[in-house]
Length: 76
Image 1 (spheres, rainbow, N blue to C red):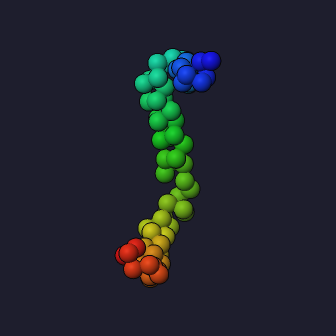
Image 2: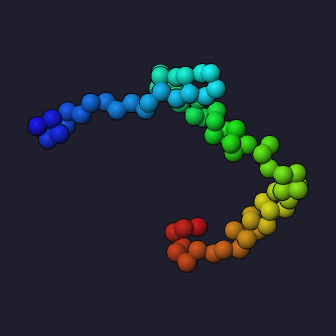
Image 3: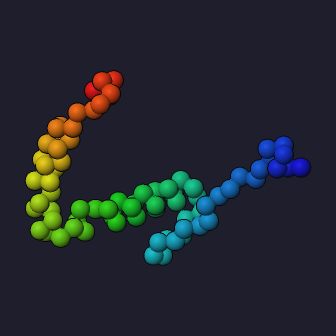
């Protein structure tokens, strides 16, 4: 009956642990996850050769994107 009435218990993400830190508070868990993803996707994890090639790749990507003309005029 509860399912039909829309009365659902609030779902929480289980406690998260990073090293010796364990967080149960949703706001602190959010910060913990953000910090983790920031460290995982940091450019400091890239090899030096790849980091040197990034500016050239950005220029090539921008140039290729500017050469694409949309078929629908409203997309300009």
